[in-house]
Image (cartoon, rainbow, N blue to C red; front, side, top):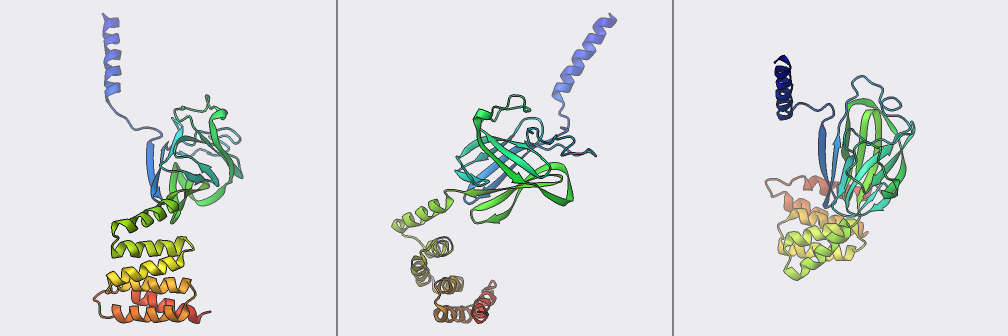
Length: 281
């Protein structure tokens, strides 16, 4: 009878345990970051330091690490990218690393359903590069992957734990070309003043087609002559083209036009700064 009661108690405890969710020692996390015009997503687990020596201790130097805990970290790219200087096709990959004191090996593998490192298959690697380690004075208790140092078509993905930081640059491979094609196609659909305005800025900042940029900004201003912010970007394009006199005259026109507005959104000062930049040379 006692044995029956004990077995019943164990069985009931098992059922209750399966139904109750408890905190994970290494909680899972997902971060999604837009780089250029497409998303990069990372799914990983976040072990804590908990007073332990991390790199060279808990995480052995020279040994492959799943870059987190539990299931291997997975990184997904919506579009083709340049990852750490190498072209990587869109898709999902497991992210493994081999930490060392001064540098880490960063590995991407097409096999994403891996627990631990025992079944790691080198033949499925698509990326294997060495990245230098940086020491930080800011102690990070839980392993963290985040993004920063954003530019128009790139960002830095950082692996952080304890006082160690490893940075990997991710750059959109096709975004610039796609945007250019989108703007060119827009010409056949009757673009608005804002379409021409945004296109002019893109071509001025990311291509050599400054004549094209000037043509588009002129059309934008013609469609919306009260838009002093568009006129400021015309002055900026003229400056890029080396047309000093025209750039200064246009910047002064911005100041005159914006002075009558309730809010100039900082474009008066921007125009003054643009004019002053010629005097510094």
